[in-house]
Length: 221
Image 1 (cartoon, rainbow, N blue to C red):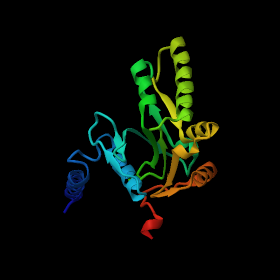
Image 2 (image 1 turned 90 degrees about the vertical axis):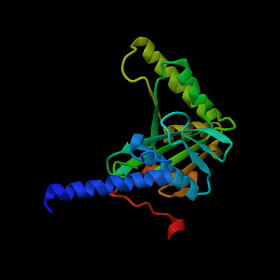
Image 3 (image 1 turned 60 degrees about the vertical axis):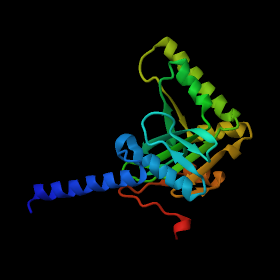
Image 4 (image 1 turned 135 degrees about the horizontal axis):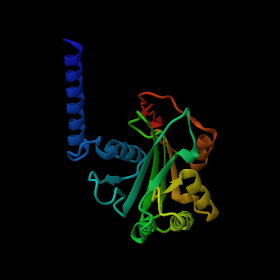
């Protein structure tokens, strides 16, 4: 079999496997559309740690709900480069902040998940889950400050990105000011770790080995 035929066969096998996984785990929606596989892996990590999450496979609507009660969960993922993953690398962008309706959405979330992936990762290296379902002053204050800074810049020059960026370090610092750290849960690989451990590992820098990554889990040992 020549090189071209070999490539065609391997590519066909990959596509067939991806659609099989899509049928099994994503209601037939292709797992590589809009990074759906990342959302699925985030769900797997949460369920591995006893958190019941229902994901929305569609591009439209809310990303997920948790425990049946927290019906408006926002999921943000990011790709990290370099050789270490730090707390500020676990982040997300919230776009269309030049409209009041989009700004208001950030205050209506029941929770926000920030997850960081290396380019070829199927599972997140680190993840922060912030529960805002019963109100979280630390989150509201942080969002307000970010939006005020954005609107000031936008009024001077309505060009460029219409988004604000928020990272895990900012979230944890803000909720700490309001004595609301209990709203945050941190995950390294497949395991939930205490928030203090999460912060320590990522502030020092979590080593990143590039290439195909298989997540480890204490529960899988």
